[in-house]
Image 1 (tube, rainbow, N blue to C red):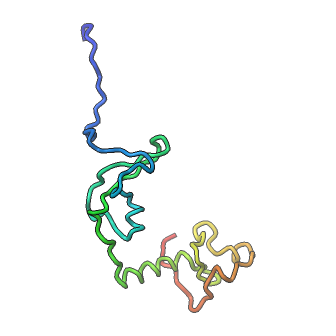
Image 2: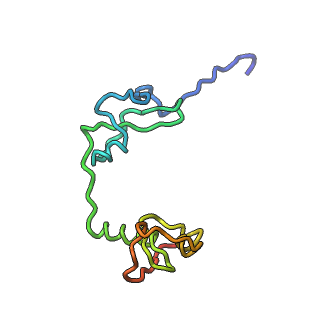
Length: 140
């Protein structure tokens, strides 16, 4: 380089300095996160984020979307709801005692519910009594 010193410039090709950033609780009205949209039964509806929310000294970030461009969430069909219920039943049903619990069981690590594994009695309010055997179809 014959004594000439090059000036190195750090360039972010995707940053055009026009994307606004807001601190926690400082976003203007009309801009919300995906979770806030979901709480309002809305979805982004294909729109791109218009701003970014930053908190915890820049360690946490979330995209902000416009509420006026959001669309209502789609309703699942009965077949989709049935498929989701069957998938959850496979994760919540003990293969030994056939009880369906109100939470997912550790089937990969224990292979059954806590009562079948340790003998610790389960709270009767935490499960539904078995009616018919359920076959597990999920891969472990």
